[in-house]
Length: 227
Image (cartoon, rainbow, N blue to C red; front, side, top):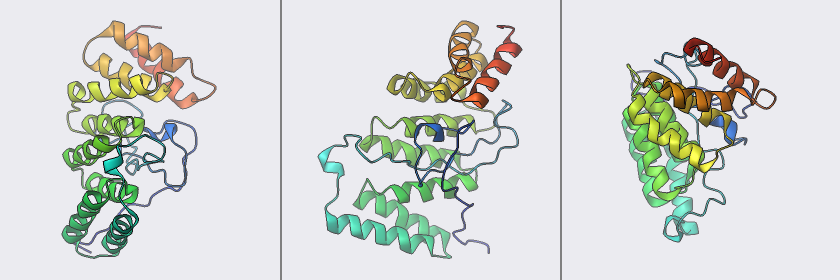
């Protein structure tokens, strides 16, 4: 119904393969960031749900001030529960943002905010959701990847804006084949063939663990004439 707080189905688990950022955190809370309106073959036709916070707020060393007391945490969760059962989407979004202010570690609030904005192609708001998260989880690989993915979902993709977030994700985990793939693709779009080939070759060597990522990396390398 118009104006209702409706969300796309959220997958409860993520398997190996080409999955924006979800590869790095397997948990029952995993969801996937949409990869719409981009030029590479992974994104085309793959209108996926937004990557949620897959264990983002567990054992990540958030500042003590970011941790809510039990009462605040309970209040935040109650706001999330109320929001997802509302038919007034504007009020629901207001409650979800309020929940993140009461308890910045309430992961479901970020998940649903991301899903809501992503389903409406409001990628600037997806960026805002994850930028708030990294204030409290500065070492969250998924958050940085999601910001990059959101920028790349614009039409045309905002490669220059996405680049520093993919770089940060790679800095956090230099073994991430997905981060390497995205860096290679972004550098290719920006015309830096040397850097593109460097990261794409790294992603392409990970065929056993992430065959779909490796296959895409090889395809882009072929398009660049670097194989």
